[in-house]
Length: 335
Image (cartoon, rainbow, N blue to C red; front, side, top):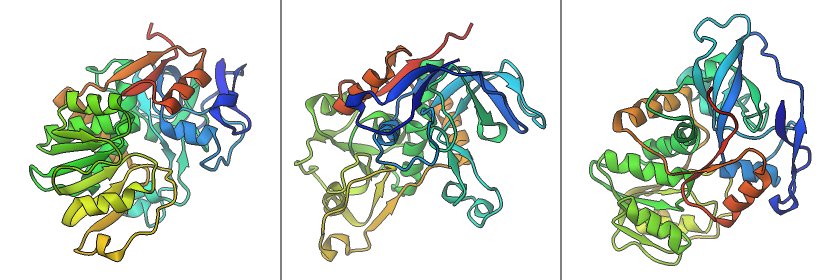
């Protein structure tokens, strides 16, 4: 099979991913093999490739918003079928036995393994995955529009749940990329009033097209205090500002896996029972809930389709902010 392999992290400008020929992987017990159809491009991929997130496995094949067709099934798998279209997200497996796993918090499992970090991911023609960590894709979604739901969509969905937004509340989204543009659609479907802070005119215009009541730049202040804020941008300096932008009792949720250091801020910015929390990965329940909700509301992520042969260049476009919505690599046709 052909695959994009990372051997040594370095800036994406240096083209760290190598396009190589590898043996097709074989599923082990409890696993299935997918013929990959599409894989979303996530900023987490960029953090991994550039070495901002630890890589316990090298070389590794990145990619963790994967849509594919099951073409082989390992022993001990009875709930899936050859020919079934499924999705593979960031969470690849957990121990299933620790206190976190036993209390519906498997996203915090200390032995959790992640797609494209601990195990090979979807920037390849084939990949294997644990059968209990793949998800049937609703028929209403084509491959390209299903892929963004599997990380950007589900992380935004979990962040939205943690935001504890009151009914018809005012929600701020800081940063407006792959995850935020899906989150704004879900939030508005659930009745939220939305406000966006993001760098660049293109992102602000995108937010307004999707129904944001107000969109401004990183130095602007929302026109009124908000009930909750979700920070998608990997900029720690936004946290003190976001705390100043929420009402007393408001919640600021950091949705990124990586963020720059938080600058010093005064206790009065947190005072008033304001809450600061982070999102760590997602659970299988989050993925199932989001896919069900997305199908019910006919959610359509905004996507830019890319070819499979120029992945370094596509990640560079992500870094430079040269497209809106989610980039998705078309790996193979369904036929």
